[in-house]
Length: 196
Image (cartoon, rainbow, N blue to C red; front, top):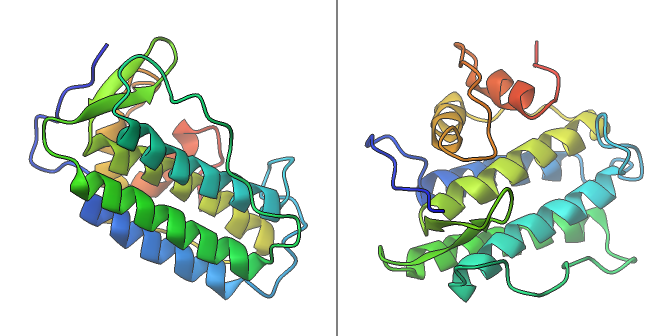
């Protein structure tokens, strides 16, 4: 199965991913001195564990795209921070993973495709789609961490709107209707509470 290029000119781009990265990193840095052992929002994971997972997700999408595999994800395990890593190290780790994904997308030609989903069946997509794939995981888990830390985080509405529209084409997403609040729409679609 394949995901085709978006039909509109308002796709979520790698430049959008870079902008969102800056916003997430700023939010996490503002809470770097807080207790990252507390639960991340409604998750059972701590803020530390959720940040660690976020880094792995973003790194993994760079690996998937760089592999150019068409039939399945590359057969490698997860990337994890060492136990002694600090919250500041996690922020730096996310920056590194985001730079890897951004650079991998930019280096790929327009003909490059790779597996972006494995369920319900292996699905390939063009390199540009990996920006939205990494962004969605990053922004949702950034929210979880920020809720746990008590740090304000509301990503730019234009980025959320394009991310919402881009991800509607994916086989794993429902067809929920959007409202005038694209950030709350993204949260609700992922099973999280809408922001007030």
